[in-house]
Image (cartoon, rainbow, N blue to C red; front, side, top):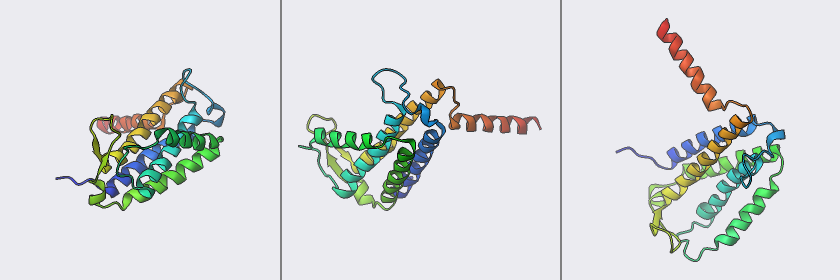
Length: 182
């Protein structure tokens, strides 16, 4: 059986965050107000949302170690997150929050024992399934970030940029093609 624990979760999150940071660095600050469509977060709002999501999940799982979301005040939680997102206004502030909060999250994940990861957390009553493993909830932070990074990479295309992962893939294809013709 393949084992995927805290160390592997931390390593994979660091890779996802590294790629999100590259996208954030490559988009010029003058485009941080760009919105792909009405009612869609701007580049700055999306990046702030990513940074704050990790810190909010750190609060839930590392600090409070929630075991149930029954009776959880999602409204207050969401408002607090939105306030934190709005404090991140400039590209340097956003980049710093992405770096700091990302490493804080990954460092915590790295040392998690199997019994904590396999623990069950009761979900809000209206959700199915009614419980999820802590591992699944922690993994969802990375999945959430990848979702928004994909949106940001499409925005890069709309701004006339080629995302770094596409450039790297094309470079690899060219290297392989040259090696095959040699």
